[in-house]
Length: 338
Ligand SMILES: *Cc1c(COP(=O)(O)O)cnc(C)c1O
Image (cartoon, rainbow, N blue to C red; front, side):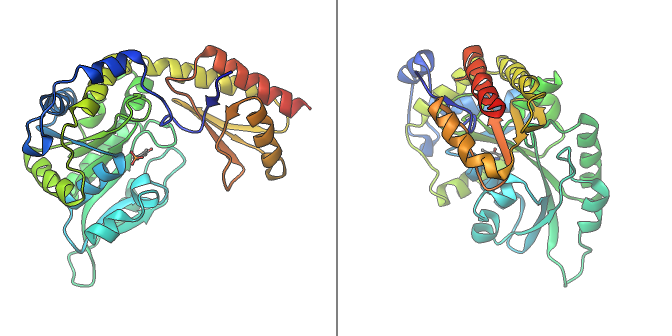
């Protein structure tokens, strides 16, 4: 029996068709700008999302770091959510490597940063303060797609204060599919967007940063400095192109399976379903039962990430089919009914 792994949508393995595309990739030295497949991936996403240029990078963490460093100079500041990936889960890279000061503010329950709070956090032009340069949003946030009218308002606020606007769009395509809009409709509000190919899209490696030609030129310098200049990276970019061709529309299946999982658990005593958003389901389990739950689910060969809090996140992806969802439901029902 195969394991069902619901820890994250990063755990997908490339299937035979994606591996075949990687095998067939035309390659060159991308540090010389000569890898045709990397160039095709960058151009394709730039065109699709409405930007001048794109840059293929090894990870979403590096993509966000390069964006922050390209937008901000030493001593500048970016406004960011207190639980945002770029602030909390990237090793403090913007501060450590970019000397960029974060100004974290609490996210609202829907993942938005309340714009009145953002506005109050923008520093006046005064020698006491860091220079506020950038607002950074995340979409989806814990599976939630940011409301489209919020993006319009955030853009207007940034324009009014001369700030740039960056999107950590690790799961941009989940947001677009969940909202039934083109990804470009979301991306249009931002000066730069980072997209992960290795989350729900199912590629083994890589993210792409999109922006103006000038911003991407700067990011390319920074990528070399950060050690992210790869050579015959077309083998990886081919997986990204394959994913964009074949794995976007099917994100709706992950969302439907997440909804099915959440509704099957809704009436179960002993756990609380906190919510389901795009490909994620969140449940609360009494802390005293977490270890037993982990043991039980391991026996059923369903891998969950049981961490520091009562909240357990389950993430649907390419490698979990309907039978996998059913096995998960059966195992959880057996545990909580016993
Ligand atoms: C996964 C993720 C990233 C980037 O992660 P890497 O593991 O570095 O590719 C950035 N932001 C969010 C919201 C993510 O979920």
